[in-house]
Image (cartoon, rainbow, N blue to C red; front, side):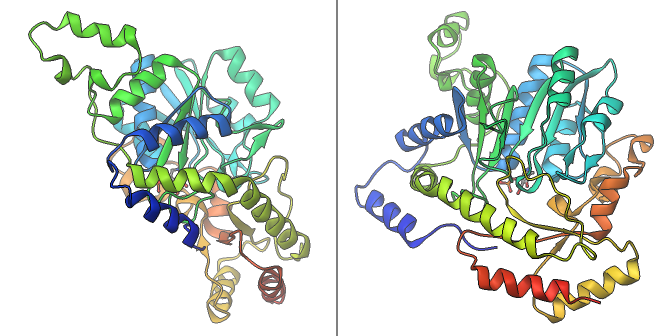
Length: 383
Ligand SMILES: Cc1ncc(COP(=O)(O)O)c(C=O)c1O
């Protein structure tokens, strides 16, 4: 991967700093939130200090809305998606992915759903679109909430509409190699006033005065024994970002569409040249915004796989096995004492394929075709 923060971003920050501005959350954060909302196509956005914070606040808001219930999540995701469900006293229900999108499979979601299922927390993995008509119709019919994790897929679309604008709430990460990077950072998006209000307060210690709405602020009258500037209406923490992150974000938004195009061109070129006898190539490219090049070996032997990894190391091709979050989360130690033993069964064949035989290697806007060709030639020459 490559650092997405350019010299130009740094120069913009330097010019901003020369004005001796406020650096904690202020006007630039608000402006970035407005511009991001417009880019995604939602009413409200909340800029926070990471994608995992966005996950956690989102599940706190969903918990506040639904009370109890289970949430369908993929075992192939970032750990914070699952931890956010558990740490908000909700139950995860796992469902397998579709290899074509590396994201939750509609039929498997339907299979994993029961009468206590209140939401589906879709991770749009690696720039793929995890949504389709079947899934959206099912959720609508069953009145199940959709939450979208778009941390790896900024700008990906379903039916020409940006991901992150379909769910009740959606999350983005602006970490190092993501499509847009604010050093550290994340965004929560929604069209729902109550969810927005909850999230914006949760980000700021749960304080009433963080609200943007007069009808909410008026509630201070109900607490005559409290100073109206210090009413902690609901639990919360400090998940704020700052003016420097927002300044970088605003500047990067200007080149985001172009960067997405470059990343997609890179991926399509990579895939076109990849040998289909060795590697799975049947991805669904509709609406993609590629994050990294996914690779899945067709030969499912561990000896073969180990040799492949030695070969990559020898040829100095950096890789991550297991894709997002290192593969099957149900194999990770953090979950062992957190969920019922019966839920730890690893019977998700597609997730297991990616766990043992799936990889990603870096993609970034400045990656040259000649370098991609070189990488593909090395991959295709593996015997
Ligand atoms: C799908 C997904 N969700 C959440 C996160 C967490 O984001 P962050 O690293 O900004 O906390 C990541 C991290 O890259 C991710 O890939």
